[in-house]
Image (tube, rainbow, N blue to C red; front, side, top):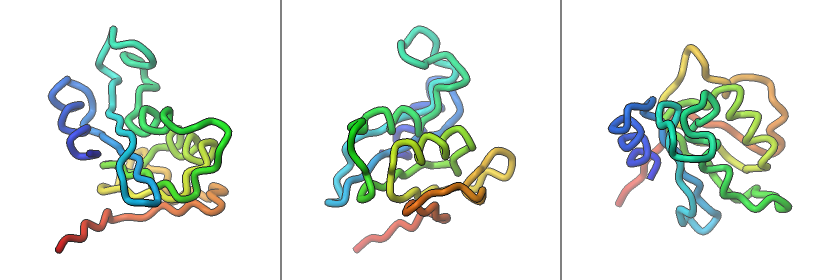
Length: 125
């Protein structure tokens, strides 16, 4: 889902970043893509705040913890997105690519009990 969202963002002229939320049962229940250059699509589209991770996190229930939820993203989250993960109370972050310019997974944020891990490990049969 995250890579499909990334491809869609690229095809639409935005930064090729996609994300997906996976529950404790392994099921994908939300996805999002970067929409910085998608004006007129509603919400945050067409703004500098239209990050893929924010789009996915916006699907979470407000008054619950999400310790068993994993946010998968194709690029290391920035400070903005890492802050949104902390506020959203998501348990784990997995990202496929390091962002040496804007990545914030190494910042000393209180992710209690969140963890950010690179590289994304894809396991198959």
